Length: 498
Ligand SMILES: Nc1ncnc2c1ncn2[C@@H]1O[C@H](COP(=O)(O)OP(=O)(O)OP(=O)(O)O)[C@@H](O)[C@H]1O
Ligand SMILES: [Mg+2]
Image (cartoon, rainbow, N blue to C red):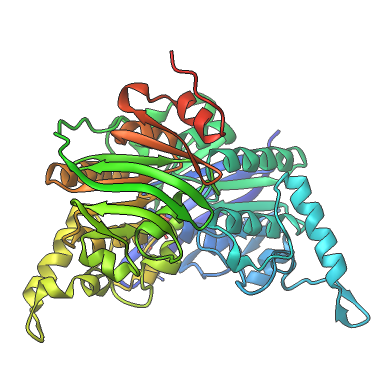
């Protein structure tokens, strides 16, 4: 007999202008791994925030372990053994990895914080997770992927009965995802109940027992994973049938627009490639391979690099991103919270600020042009919001990502560097973004796409450059694309070409 651990009864949450949760009732069984799926803005994060006590539902009750509660508070939730790994990180940047794992519960000795025990304990947790990390390092020096692993470790250090993870795999590559799934399986064996949010279908099918689908704040359906297929699940999520395939694009690839020769620095060595007009060049590699690093040098965000960069036949080397943007190159960063969106400003200003030149004459900003620009991006990207004036910080995670895209798509860039463009983006919206990328290429723009998703690299790129530990291990033409070929090169192995 399956025991119900958690039962949500008629939960609603009203925000100004949006009913984020609309009468949601859901049972979660003890020891199961339940996927919570749905499009961006469907209400997934909001639902779990009612469980962690970070927001109060407007209506409804929560029954946990047989007791009924009107709402949770962070303390109550913690005392009940509920742990949440949030979509947006919650780390203290200047503290070490070990201190972050134990923050709020640091081991004490003679009234002082016991650093040695803290480090030893943290080491054990990471060893158990099979993650190689220096626990004395400040968190701000970590890549996004490692920050995510620290978030997870933090929760494993607690006595957890219900572990909720909001898109934990979004910043991880295949390899780290495998580590995480191993951890999830171990926890399941120990009887921990898990609620898992992800936009990646294969993960849901790999690690979950059941899937609950939300749409527009409502619970649409709950399925046993063994009894449903991907198409059915997607149909419930988006409310219509759609295939997961990549859009076909007939396009012509033109002359070389950018040539990079022997670019080094920042941990990467001797990278060379060419980018053609209308082309999508994929950049593959594991976390730490140097994909982001090489792009930051190219873009002028990190100085101290060497090598040759030729743009439209002219030698260039950008000292800062501003110069790069002036020359028509823009970078869409992987860490939207740190570099991409201004959370305290409305969507409209986020989109318009980098593009002021296009909407003003002299000193004056033309309101009508602003509205047109914002409206166009809003509808092109289907940003779920009640108006362009909604603060970016109150958008769902995936919709914040779309705002980052919007602000650069509105510009006149010729070369776009996308760092994980569809991270955290739902299946339906991914399709829109892929179409948009193809449309940009048809207009003569060129794209360099860093991606950790194999399917995406293969489905969207015209060629793929693969890095391993800062070195270029190969370049694949479309005819040579395969998951194995990319993985082989990304692991630093030689590719045997037949
Ligand atoms: N503080 C807030 N103020 C106003 N609206 C909000 C606030 N927080 C969330 N919302 C709205 O509630 C809705 C649900 O958001 P939620 O973050 O739960 O979506 P989600 O399913 O987690 O999406 P994603 O996959 O993009 O993370 C969205 O329309 C969002 O804009
Ligand atoms: Mg969310």
